[in-house]
Length: 127
Image (cartoon, rainbow, N blue to C red; front, side, top):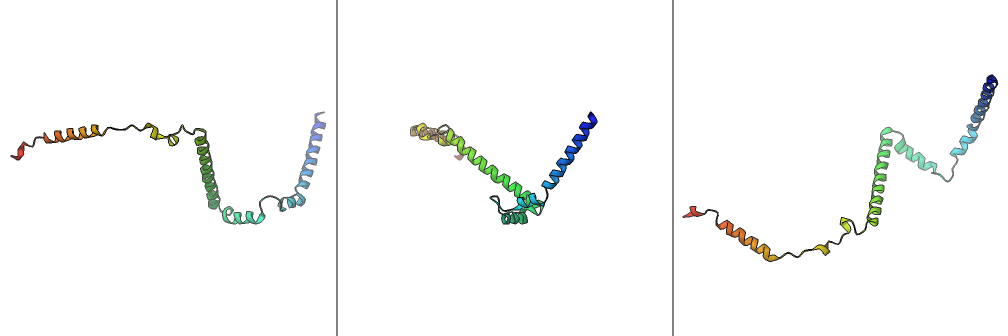
């Protein structure tokens, strides 16, 4: 019984492999390279000539893409956060409501006290 199951499994695998190998023949391959609604082949060829031929250029492409994506993601996140928390963030608070008018008299008194302290610094040596 197990022998017949094993034989059937081998035959099924052989059939699938045969079907798979015929499916990957030139008929399917030519359909994948046909022009369609995807990226134009000329653009892909130019991209490959610029970035795909060397590891350094490809890594530069990847790092640049990561930096651009991070900048866009960070900017969008900040914009969404600011719009959701409008009026509650440091940048959006109207600080003119919290201005406390200082008395100029207090400043004048402090300056007068500083001048008086400056006169009593022991200038008795000038006689």
